[in-house]
Length: 95
Image (cartoon, rainbow, N blue to C red; front, side):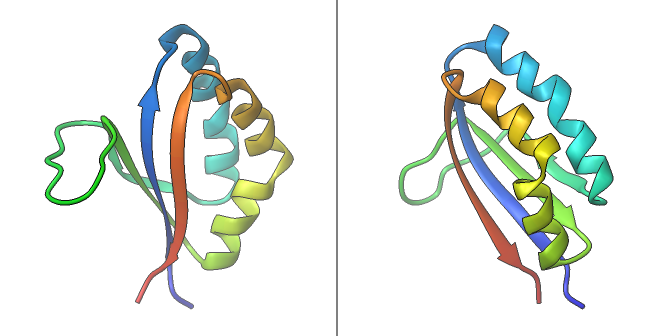
């Protein structure tokens, strides 16, 4: 079974509101076996449009990555993120 990854590109516009998401989302990540490989930090946009924050999260499987995103725990955290910024999130199957 291949691992899978969330790749998120984020622009935070309200740091106080975003903290509520950041405080609650780890519950879902832990439940589905997520491991953060990159979370913010220095990045260099080589092509295309970028965002200031880039995150890569590893999951044990594609199913776990999907289940985490669709879980009640993550969706509750996500609701707190809405209005605090913009995010592009893709789930990618590993090789």
